Image 1 (cartoon, rainbow, N blue to C red):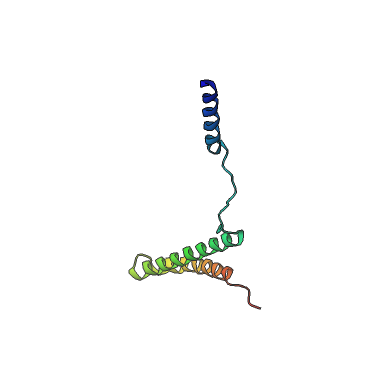
Image 2: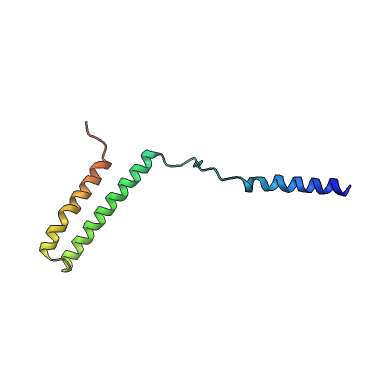
Length: 95
């Protein structure tokens, strides 16, 4: 009788522990999981925000005198170009 009880307890312990012993599933099963297009759009939005924040900081530093005119002219062009590329990438094609 005790042996049957021990076997039953061992079986219950194994059944309860089984979900915790399995390898986790690597797939994303969320209903609102971002698609590849969503992930690309989020990356473009981050690029845009980074470029615009860098431009804003450069403008502020130039106005407060931390960046002189020569350095400002050298730095503002590439930042504006990066911001323009990011903005164009986010806009849908106009036909």
